[in-house]
Amino acid sequence: MARLREQRHELRAGIVGEAGAARQRALGKRTARERLELLLDEDSFLEVDMYRRRPGGPHTDGVVAGSGTIDGRQVYVYAQDFTISGGSLGEAHASKIHKVMDLALSTGSPIIGLNDSGGARIQEGVMALNGYGGIFRRQVESSGVIPQISVVLGPCAGGAAYSPALADFTFMVRDVAKMYLTGPEVVASVTGEQVSHDELGGADVHGQRSGVATFIHDDEESCLADVRYLVSLLPRNNLQPPPSSGPCGATTDDRPLLADIVPAESNKPYDMRDVIAEVVDDAEFLELHAGWAANVICALARIDGEVVGVVGNQPIAFAGVLDSAASQKAARFVRLCDAFGIPLVTLVDVPGFLPGTDQEHGGAIRHGAKLLYAYCEATVPRVQVTLRKAYGGAYIVMDSRSIGTDLSFAWPTNEIAVMGAEGAVNIIHRKRVAAAADPQALRAELVAEYRDELMHPYYAAERGLVDDVIDPAQTRAVLARALLSLRDKRRTLPQRKHGNVPL
Ligand code: HXC
Image 1 (cartoon, rainbow, N blue to C red):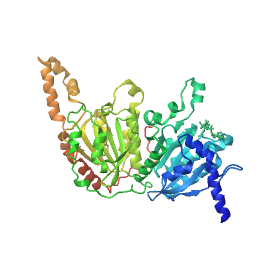
Image 2 (cartoon, rainbow, N blue to C red):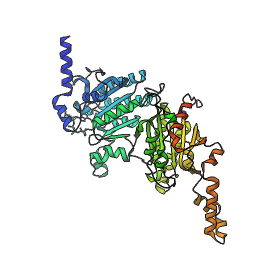
Image 3 (tube, rainbow, N blue to C red):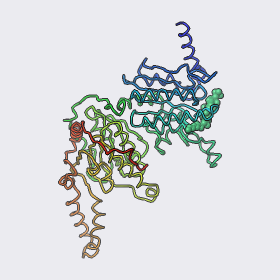
Image 4 (cartoon, rainbow, N blue to C red):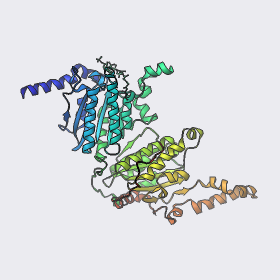
């Protein structure tokens, strides 16, 4: 026992190494073990393969792996240790990651990877590449079965970047995290372009431009705290419900402020996050991709204690239009919620799709189809609330009755139509207006007529496309009741190998 104790003490100390730890700190980083301490409940970590190494190499082989709990719920983890061979991935290192991934899948537990690595261990050649392939294959097998969280806390270069890309959630920390397929040196030699590590693949690039990162943080502490928060909103696996915090009176909770937040004029901006804060419990929600495609909001929250996924158009960003990036962002979120049994709440206020050659040539049709596809195949409870307007194709895509929403509500001010009144009159009454003695007056008359006839929620409600027209103040209560009524929803799609989602 004395020998075991001494050996383990030496191993732990030796693995981190004071010089290595100091180097991490100088870079604003923590060691792998310190990170796991921040992430997991105290004294819950159960390490595996601490003795594992390549022949003659250091123990752990540059990755600390095992399991632990977050708020008492079991998770599997691995943390790459940059102080050993730059956290590079060789055969032993990879097989440790494979082991915890296999245990996570067979026990139905989330897997969290903390990445800090120089990539494939160059000295181990193709065996390192083989190790990466094994991680990717396991990630795909686990997709939609257990939540996969990837936290980038250092370099993550080359093919290694595909691991965060395949995960359900990717966190990055400013200044320390870098992710790219080829680094600045390769970029310079191939294209002649001079670019820094940060400009090429820093946290802000992936949080705002590429959409690769889901969450961006300024430091490791707040990042790992948010990983814990995220885990508290997720089920352990696709066969279990997300954790409930119990009813909190939402079914009778009036929110008069809602009518003030949303201006009646349909083109006046407001922040959809203020609406979300009013309808969810404790005004608390976790926004995914907050800095990317801001014209649509995707957030996890609770309503009456139950986890929901909220999709909302954002009128303060490009007037809340749908474009390629917004469609991709929302589509992936809808699929995530559907895979993990999280009901969907869609808050609609959308003027349409963004017009332009940029969008059309960039495949806006293909990307919009992703969102349509994602909603159409989602079998979780789905509730839609139209706040102000929903026009044309965007009306259909934002979880309309026609594509399968379970319950649809509308505020009395709303306009659901093929297009705005002026545009509609210009097309359907062009000849009549042109031939009129006073075209201006006739146009105004026809616009008013179109508005009265078609542009109010009762037109849709009379035809069963909207289930009720509600007082905005009751939105939270109505959502809580609707979700309660749909809790045991079961819907199965026809048997097939898999659909062919327009990727
Ligand atoms: C072996 C590596 C390594 C690697 C770093 N080290 N990367 N050892 N294989 N890939 C070692 C260094 O030799 C050094 O060892 C220690 O880690 C720290 O590295 P430094 O360079 O001193 O650190 P730093 O200056 O902070 O630079 C970090 C770095 C840089 C930017 C990550 O090390 C780097 O560019 N590494 C190579 C990255 C790379 O090209 N990887 C392969 C990508 S291809 P000592 O003993 O001196 O402390 C790939 C394919 C995957 O990953 C494909 C999957 C399908």
